[in-house]
Image 1: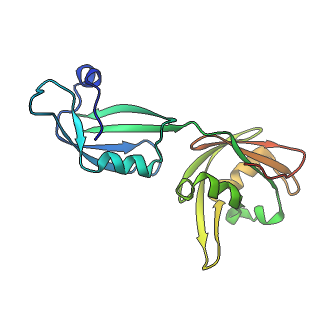
Image 2: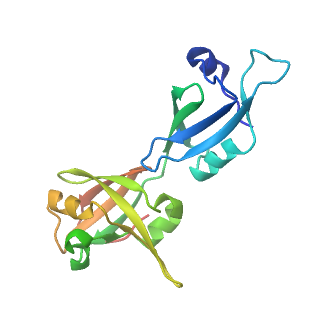
Image 3: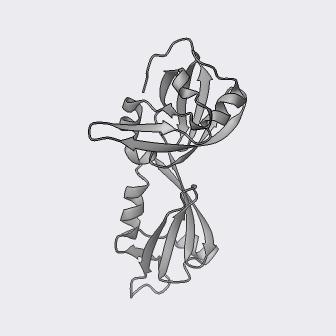
Length: 195
């Protein structure tokens, strides 16, 4: 059970309904229904979630003690929640190969060690912002599965990002995850993998 701070309700008037939903502000735009109630003895007391709506968003968005949440009122029954994770700085480094530059079908494989440590759900059909040495671009990730292996790739938008930043075969680039959906991409001297 999660309690809505009374100060939030007094300031915004939210909720105006007992049947509410939380939606994310990321491109996948998911929503989680959440039922609210007030204790019978506290007509003007704080609202509390009942059921599994809050637990579902906590699980699905990997919300933990180090996460910061920003809530924005959409209407009397809907809040947009932006989730910010305080990640330890995680990175991986790649030496770019010709297979990373195949026209519109070009893609870059994400280090297996990196995505396993970060969490599979962070890379399944997600959009990321890459901050390159020269330009910023939005890219999309895809997953490829076989009976023995799973691969995650940066695909849609990767070709444009490479051209805009002058990346070439043989370049060593480091991808540093600064926030949940943002990577800094910079040139480095060698392709040593790090997490």
